[in-house]
Length: 62
Ligand SMILES: [Zn+2]
Image (cartoon, rainbow, N blue to C red; front, top):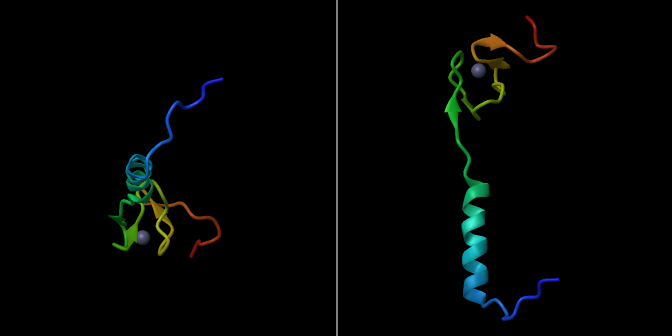
């Protein structure tokens, strides 16, 4: 089994974690094409339930 030869320094450990955190916290926000509310890409709109210009949410028919 592989065993680390040297203890990872605080700076090296924190730099590695900081690099990974920036990927996790990056959130993209787009506008809904039908109502203009801020939505996440590839998700239905939380305000009107539309996705790609169509009604996609269940139980919200009017
Ligand atoms: Zn919408």
